[in-house]
Image (cartoon, rainbow, N blue to C red):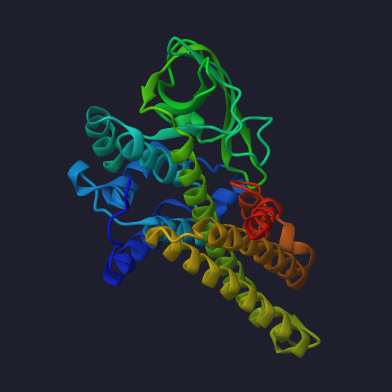
Length: 363
């Protein structure tokens, strides 16, 4: 799949405003506090009606085009507003994979439904023994039937269809489309550290439809795309956390004056903002490299993901210190932002894995 020209600045502004408006309408910090972090069908359909699922998909299939930078822009807004949407699994990974590997008939069947918000995909690739090895797949496929277990399928209970990775008798990696309600597919739902819902999917001789052929090259591209989009989401969460921490420092008083007037905390807040800007700049550079297909694209992406994760931890820890003990309570947004940052840090390569990849490239 070759990405189309990125959206112009006016389009991006409108998309950002749309996400903000929908976030105010359907989600709030109270959802984080209650633990009800599932994106329901009504919310998902509303985002589809506003065209957010059309980004990155060719107009030929009902989309509006756009590149990795545009997908990452939506992910940044998801992080900024702490939205529980499985946009990564269904759109960034699922729709992109279908567009890249799917047959013409499959694309014409699935992509318009995805764009309209009528079809939600679950992306079942990660396994318990995968660690940071993104192409480690033990799930098997024999005669079109899949057996194995997948973990970390976001909002798996709400997805109508699953995209599952598996290896055939020769060890060739492929992706397969499954109906979630068919025999041989079972779900075990659980909560992540940030209260979002994920699922373990247990496959026992489940029937699947092959999506294209050998998938290893496509998986490498998808992993890089997911890593940079996860970094963008973390940058959004950092920005939201810095916003709320600055607001708190302006109103919290100690010794008769706002704590934000103390020089040591002013310096700390500046350091937090610098950390945000460092991560944002590296993400922007990596996105340009991705859309331009530069030779060192993977190195830029690893640098951005590692910096975003490290900046997120730095800002998160500082925010909790400034808030004090209440920073980790459910009533305060700081802890919820930090949990989202930590959850993202374990996805699509930890900071350590990405630094190691940079080092290997340099040798």
